[in-house]
Amino acid sequence: MEQNITLIGASKLFVCDESFEVIDEGAIAFQSNPNGRNTIIETGTYAALSARYPQGRFYKDGVILPSFVNAHIHFEFGNNTSQFVYGSFERWLESVMAKRDGVLSDFTLALKDSIQEQLMSGVGSVGAISSYGGDMSLLADSPLRVVYFNEAIGSTPSALDFLYSNFKARYASAKALQSDTFIPAIALHAPYSVHSVLAKRVLEMARKDQCPLSVHFLESQAEYQWLQNAQGWFKEFYTNILKIPTPKPLYSIEEFLGLFDGLGALWTHCLFATPKELEYIAQKGNVISCPRSNRLLCGKYLDLERLLSCGLKPIFGTDGKSSNNNLNMLDELRTALFAYPQMDIERLAQMILLGASLYPARALGLDNGVLTAGKWADISVFVCPDISQSTQAPLQFLLHSQKVKTLYINGKAVLFE
Image (cartoon, rainbow, N blue to C red):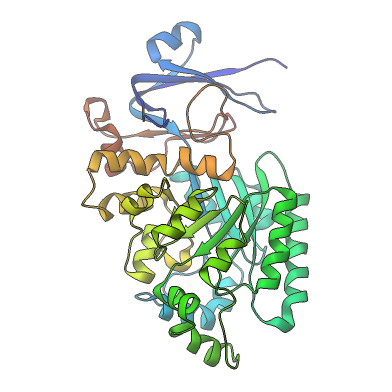
């Protein structure tokens, strides 16, 4: 097969490696064959690479960086605007239980809009959490690189066989659609919502298939109180809303963590996790933060300093429109930038960008997220006013970038101006 090589350059190139190398007047050369696995050949200065690869394109006041990885997104709730109640996790969950059927009905147009919103904000890869499977076909056919988490949820003992059969059917359907850009995966919803029998069966499949694994964990104070003390709001929730007499937690926190022994997983939220619990997660897992969702539901942001002290690097996702005003990754990252005034702002800007590139790519098992030779050619280009003059390029990029100008996924331009 003839090798086609594309060369692009820009005023700034963010490699997005651990040292956060920035190449001034940088460039990247990559394969762009119509079919096959297209990878990065090399990065360097535009002057050096254009001597070897003619007919390149240079973006003045542009920034080249890996396409973003949105590690945690719920596409199925794209119809929501003002139906759900914010201000506390408890009020929000009650509103979801009351109005979810309407929000979930006929969400095809919303799903298409959400896919386009990902692309326009520079996202090339997503960790898509799906509770029902209605988004499966469209995501498999989309330009996005999708890790598709089939989610197990349900705690009613009499329904366990049905819930497991439904999960297996959805997971089998996802495996039938598997491709280079659609990767079947498994998720448990949360320790307050998945029966231990169902959880153990599903985790057996995850162990067998060695697939990516995701779970929501300690998102609210109510969840922590329920698991730790069998008290609080969830006791009333199970009694009055789910009509379960004398309810008890399905696990202690330690028992739930123990289900994942030996398994790497992406643990989402973890707002109320203690250092001990975070240190356990750090052994093989990762933590995802969804800042806007956490602010709307819990009035709290993940403690990044605590996370770092436990050996974890932050990963960022948008969550779903069930708890957000949009799914724009740039908006999510800007929120994170303003959420931590105690941290050095330049260090924080770099950490945020790595939390949407290098770190989630590793956690999801994707061979992208950093612009080095041999990695997948998943690349974005933004134009950012006067960025060529900036000595704080990562920070100014986060402050001023609005939408992607050119987006490559597997070396193919899926958006191009």
